[in-house]
Amino acid sequence: MYSDEDGKLAVRFSRAVVEVAVKNEKLPDFDFPEHFNEESGAFVTINTYPKKELRGCIGYPLPYYPLVETLAKAAVGATQDPRFPKLGKDELDNIVVEVSILTPPEEIKVDKPMDYPGQIVIGRDGLIIKKGANSGLLLPQVPIEHNWDIQTFLSHTCMKAGLLPDAWLEEGVVIQKFGGEVFAEETPRGKISRKELHECA
Picture (cartoon, rainbow, N blue to C red):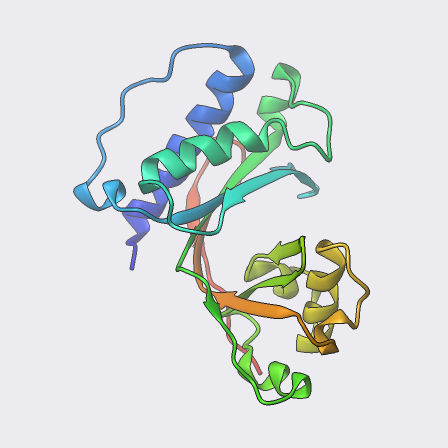
Protein backbone atom coordinates (compact mmCIF):
# COMPACT_ATOMS: atom_id res chain seq x y z
CA MET A 1 0.00 0.00 0.00
CA TYR A 2 2.81 2.42 0.90
CA SER A 3 6.35 2.24 -0.44
CA ASP A 4 9.48 2.36 1.68
CA GLU A 5 10.01 5.93 0.44
CA ASP A 6 6.50 6.84 1.58
CA GLY A 7 7.31 5.40 4.99
CA LYS A 8 10.54 7.34 5.27
CA LEU A 9 8.73 10.55 4.36
CA ALA A 10 5.97 9.85 6.90
CA VAL A 11 8.52 9.30 9.68
CA ARG A 12 10.66 12.31 8.74
CA PHE A 13 7.56 14.50 8.70
CA SER A 14 6.34 13.13 12.03
CA ARG A 15 9.77 13.64 13.60
CA ALA A 16 9.77 17.24 12.35
CA VAL A 17 6.31 17.85 13.82
CA VAL A 18 7.44 16.38 17.15
CA GLU A 19 10.48 18.65 17.22
CA VAL A 20 8.65 21.88 16.32
CA ALA A 21 5.85 21.08 18.78
CA VAL A 22 8.37 20.75 21.60
CA LYS A 23 10.53 23.69 20.53
CA ASN A 24 7.58 25.88 19.46
CA GLU A 25 9.21 26.52 16.10
CA LYS A 26 7.93 26.73 12.51
CA LEU A 27 7.51 23.50 10.55
CA PRO A 28 9.78 23.22 7.48
CA ASP A 29 8.20 22.67 4.06
CA PHE A 30 7.58 19.12 2.83
CA ASP A 31 6.58 17.88 -0.61
CA PHE A 32 4.06 15.05 -0.40
CA PRO A 33 2.83 12.70 -3.11
CA GLU A 34 -0.86 13.00 -3.95
CA HIS A 35 -1.86 9.86 -2.05
CA PHE A 36 -0.78 11.49 1.22
CA ASN A 37 -3.89 13.65 0.78
CA GLU A 38 -6.14 10.59 0.93
CA GLU A 39 -7.92 9.95 4.22
CA SER A 40 -6.16 7.39 6.40
CA GLY A 41 -5.87 6.35 10.00
CA ALA A 42 -2.40 6.46 11.57
CA PHE A 43 -0.55 6.41 14.87
CA VAL A 44 2.71 8.10 15.85
CA THR A 45 4.74 6.40 18.57
CA ILE A 46 7.67 7.93 20.45
CA ASN A 47 10.07 5.50 22.12
CA THR A 48 13.13 6.22 24.23
CA TYR A 49 16.53 5.35 22.79
CA PRO A 50 18.35 3.06 23.22
CA LYS A 51 16.01 1.29 25.67
CA LYS A 52 13.00 1.55 23.30
CA GLU A 53 10.57 2.23 26.14
CA LEU A 54 7.24 3.83 25.28
CA ARG A 55 7.30 7.61 25.69
CA GLY A 56 4.10 8.54 23.89
CA CYS A 57 1.65 7.11 21.37
CA ILE A 58 -1.37 8.88 19.91
CA GLY A 59 -3.32 8.21 16.75
CA TYR A 60 -6.56 8.01 14.85
CA PRO A 61 -7.77 4.53 13.90
CA LEU A 62 -10.43 5.74 11.47
CA PRO A 63 -9.75 7.57 8.18
CA TYR A 64 -11.21 10.91 9.25
CA TYR A 65 -8.41 13.12 7.92
CA PRO A 66 -5.92 13.16 5.02
CA LEU A 67 -2.84 11.14 5.98
CA VAL A 68 -0.67 14.28 6.28
CA GLU A 69 -3.13 15.84 8.73
CA THR A 70 -3.53 12.58 10.66
CA LEU A 71 0.24 12.31 11.09
CA ALA A 72 0.55 15.94 12.19
CA LYS A 73 -2.22 15.64 14.78
CA ALA A 74 -0.88 12.30 16.05
CA ALA A 75 2.71 13.56 16.30
CA VAL A 76 1.71 16.60 18.34
CA GLY A 77 -0.49 14.41 20.50
CA ALA A 78 2.32 11.93 21.13
CA THR A 79 4.43 14.71 22.68
CA GLN A 80 1.59 15.30 25.16
CA ASP A 81 0.39 11.75 25.79
CA PRO A 82 -1.56 12.07 29.07
CA ARG A 83 0.07 8.90 30.40
CA PHE A 84 3.46 10.66 30.53
CA PRO A 85 4.93 14.10 31.26
CA LYS A 86 5.11 16.40 28.26
CA LEU A 87 8.10 15.64 26.05
CA GLY A 88 10.97 18.03 26.80
CA LYS A 89 13.60 19.61 24.56
CA ASP A 90 16.32 17.71 26.40
CA GLU A 91 14.75 14.40 25.30
CA LEU A 92 14.73 14.99 21.54
CA ASP A 93 18.21 13.52 21.02
CA ASN A 94 17.21 10.36 22.87
CA ILE A 95 13.97 9.30 21.20
CA VAL A 96 13.03 7.41 18.04
CA VAL A 97 9.83 8.01 16.10
CA GLU A 98 7.62 5.28 14.67
CA VAL A 99 4.65 5.65 12.30
CA SER A 100 1.86 3.11 11.78
CA ILE A 101 -0.36 3.73 8.74
CA LEU A 102 -3.62 1.83 9.16
CA THR A 103 -6.31 0.20 7.10
CA PRO A 104 -9.92 0.93 8.14
CA PRO A 105 -11.13 -1.28 11.02
CA GLU A 106 -13.63 -4.02 10.23
CA GLU A 107 -15.80 -5.87 12.73
CA ILE A 108 -14.99 -9.53 13.34
CA LYS A 109 -18.22 -11.53 13.03
CA VAL A 110 -18.34 -14.89 14.83
CA ASP A 111 -21.03 -17.33 15.95
CA LYS A 112 -19.60 -17.59 19.45
CA PRO A 113 -16.83 -15.70 21.31
CA MET A 114 -14.45 -18.68 21.39
CA ASP A 115 -14.25 -18.34 17.60
CA TYR A 116 -12.52 -14.93 17.81
CA PRO A 117 -8.93 -16.28 18.02
CA GLY A 118 -9.41 -18.14 14.75
CA GLN A 119 -10.16 -14.87 12.98
CA ILE A 120 -7.05 -13.03 14.22
CA VAL A 121 -3.49 -13.31 12.92
CA ILE A 122 -0.56 -12.10 15.04
CA GLY A 123 1.62 -9.81 12.93
CA ARG A 124 -1.19 -8.91 10.55
CA ASP A 125 -3.98 -7.59 12.75
CA GLY A 126 -4.36 -4.80 15.23
CA LEU A 127 -7.38 -4.95 17.54
CA ILE A 128 -10.06 -2.61 18.82
CA ILE A 129 -12.36 -3.88 21.57
CA LYS A 130 -15.49 -1.94 22.57
CA LYS A 131 -18.15 -2.47 25.21
CA GLY A 132 -20.50 0.33 26.10
CA ALA A 133 -18.47 3.50 26.58
CA ASN A 134 -15.22 1.54 26.94
CA SER A 135 -12.81 1.17 24.03
CA GLY A 136 -9.23 -0.05 23.71
CA LEU A 137 -6.83 -0.37 20.79
CA LEU A 138 -3.51 -2.15 20.32
CA LEU A 139 -1.44 -1.89 17.14
CA PRO A 140 -0.37 -4.95 15.10
CA GLN A 141 3.25 -4.75 16.26
CA VAL A 142 2.40 -4.86 19.98
CA PRO A 143 1.85 -8.64 20.38
CA ILE A 144 5.05 -9.32 18.43
CA GLU A 145 7.08 -6.98 20.64
CA HIS A 146 5.75 -8.75 23.76
CA ASN A 147 5.69 -12.28 22.34
CA TRP A 148 1.96 -12.68 23.03
CA ASP A 149 -0.30 -15.38 21.67
CA ILE A 150 -3.74 -14.48 20.32
CA GLN A 151 -5.66 -14.94 23.57
CA THR A 152 -3.12 -12.84 25.47
CA PHE A 153 -3.44 -10.17 22.77
CA LEU A 154 -7.22 -10.19 23.22
CA SER A 155 -6.88 -9.97 27.01
CA HIS A 156 -4.49 -7.02 26.89
CA THR A 157 -6.74 -5.19 24.44
CA CYS A 158 -9.61 -5.69 26.89
CA MET A 159 -7.50 -4.27 29.71
CA LYS A 160 -6.54 -1.32 27.50
CA ALA A 161 -10.28 -0.67 27.26
CA GLY A 162 -10.60 -0.77 31.04
CA LEU A 163 -12.34 -4.15 30.93
CA LEU A 164 -11.53 -7.46 32.60
CA PRO A 165 -8.99 -9.59 30.69
CA ASP A 166 -11.63 -12.13 29.65
CA ALA A 167 -14.23 -9.56 28.63
CA TRP A 168 -13.81 -10.60 24.99
CA LEU A 169 -15.90 -13.67 25.90
CA GLU A 170 -18.84 -11.56 27.10
CA GLU A 171 -21.98 -10.62 25.21
CA GLY A 172 -22.18 -7.04 23.97
CA VAL A 173 -18.47 -6.82 23.14
CA VAL A 174 -17.55 -5.62 19.66
CA ILE A 175 -14.13 -6.60 18.31
CA GLN A 176 -12.63 -5.01 15.22
CA LYS A 177 -9.37 -5.75 13.43
CA PHE A 178 -7.24 -3.61 11.16
CA GLY A 179 -3.94 -3.83 9.31
CA GLY A 180 -0.98 -1.53 9.43
CA GLU A 181 2.32 -0.70 7.80
CA VAL A 182 4.97 0.36 10.29
CA PHE A 183 8.05 2.49 9.65
CA ALA A 184 10.52 3.63 12.32
CA GLU A 185 13.80 5.37 13.01
CA GLU A 186 16.53 2.92 13.98
CA THR A 187 18.42 5.68 15.82
CA PRO A 188 17.43 9.28 16.70
CA ARG A 189 17.08 11.18 13.38
CA GLY A 190 18.85 8.24 11.75
CA LYS A 191 18.04 5.51 9.26
CA ILE A 192 14.35 4.76 8.75
CA SER A 193 13.19 1.26 7.88
CA ARG A 194 10.01 -0.73 7.49
CA LYS A 195 9.22 -2.98 10.44
CA GLU A 196 8.35 -6.39 9.09
CA LEU A 197 5.45 -7.84 11.04
CA HIS A 198 5.70 -11.55 10.46
CA GLU A 199 2.36 -13.30 10.43
CA CYS A 200 1.92 -16.30 12.68
CA ALA A 201 -1.10 -18.23 13.80
